[in-house]
Amino acid sequence: MPNPYNAPEISVGELAKTRQDRPGEWLIVDVRESFEISLASLEGDDVVQVPLSELSQRGLAAWPADHGDKTRPLAILCHHGIRSAQVTLWLMQQGWEHVRSVAGGIDQYAQEIDPNVGAYE
Image 1 (cartoon, rainbow, N blue to C red):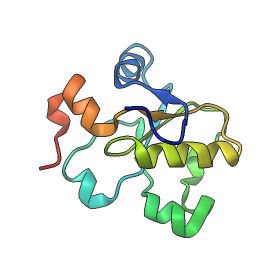
Image 2 (cartoon, helix red, strand yellow):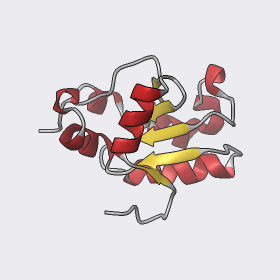
Image 3 (cartoon, rainbow, N blue to C red):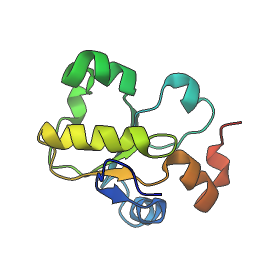
């Protein structure tokens, strides 16, 4: 299902292939809350958590200072791709140049790529 915001997307297949072929090229920003991360998550040095609740409250002050390069490709991840679409558009408005919402979110990633990432019950 396409996101209702028409945010640019990257498929879970494209993301997994990029992670394998060019590790670290994309920064995966997981915007889910901590309790969600405990249910299902991607591992790796290329994954950071920036909860949407923090972005909503603090804006760019919630963004990790060491990930401020607005030219680095970002893949924004949530449960199904709705929150990530919102954050994708917001980051584009803030000047990030190459941002994509992960289509289908962690749920789609678990279904198509790696069931070991976990799932919501």
